[in-house]
Length: 206
Picture 1 (cartoon, rainbow, N blue to C red):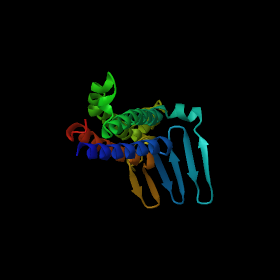
Picture 2 (picture 1 turned 120 degrees about the vertical axis):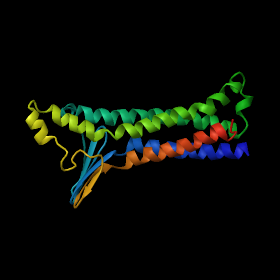
Picture 3 (picture 1 turned 120 degrees about the horizontal axis):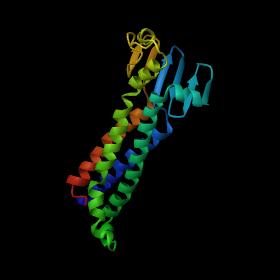
Picture 4 (picture 1 turned 90 degrees about the horizontal axis):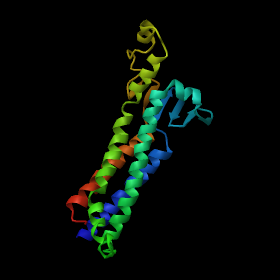
């Protein structure tokens, strides 16, 4: 039974790895106005105006002008990458356990099962941090907006949230802003990693 659970855990870890890879490679946030949509990630923006699609690198000046917002992108990406690394290690250890090889490894045979049992806790933490940090992307954008003005009156006039401009997700007629593929992928990765973590700790995998 433990071997079966080990392979179930391994599959969950692999699926979480796929999700973390998608989160790294794809786009985190989307704006859509009518037929025009823009997808944003830490270093690129892809725009589709209904007739053509083009991708551009984000200029340094834009990153500096929106430094708080891109700090959120980078932090979420960093924890996604850390989760990916931990999941790779966990996948190898879990697979070795499933085949009964782990305990036969000299010297490390007694240490690796303990590592395998609890290492996914670190992956869960990284996935959740990546997910929850990104929830602050629009608050960071509002802070960037306010930093552009010296006058409090201008800050209040141009950087207010009366129309939901700085909501994390908003959908009106012909308008949408909110998270997209990468953030959804990290949410799924979090759930999968939690499932694998429970199996590794409570399911007798190690």
